[in-house]
Length: 187
Image 1 (cartoon, rainbow, N blue to C red):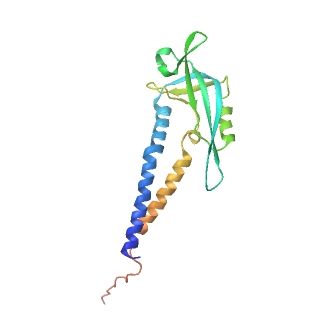
Image 2 (cartoon, helix red, strand yellow):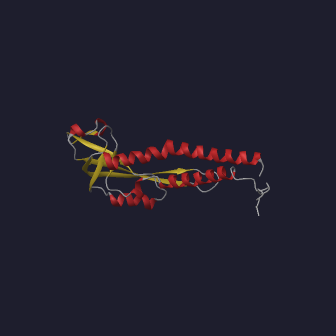
């Protein structure tokens, strides 16, 4: 491998590593930090699921089959004093002010996975939630980390990082065409 090839491989590896860093910093890391903050730092409350709606959208793929993405939106009536309810979650129901939060499941790629969210949180069920004391965000408490973290994105980013590191490392390998250093043996 000549110097130009080595430099090209190091550049390609560095480029891929840079793209992965941007993906992690712009999407994955904020999502993971927000979920960790909800799980470990936000107060919890009880509520009742009053309504759910399954939504779907189709991602048009010109090179292959289209992909349908599913998401479930839950409306949860929180058992919180109004002074702890974020103003955007305050609603008037039957002449009384109540705290109503909207919780969205992560986007999933099958209707069966979306249905599992509905099965875990059916209408009229009592649920525990974590709520952001400084904002309107509310998350279900007790969900498995397999259900709430963006594992597909994490796997893609790790695989891309490995490819980038392999290219970068391949550009740093010693030239196999150069002669081996002579070993001088003294007798």
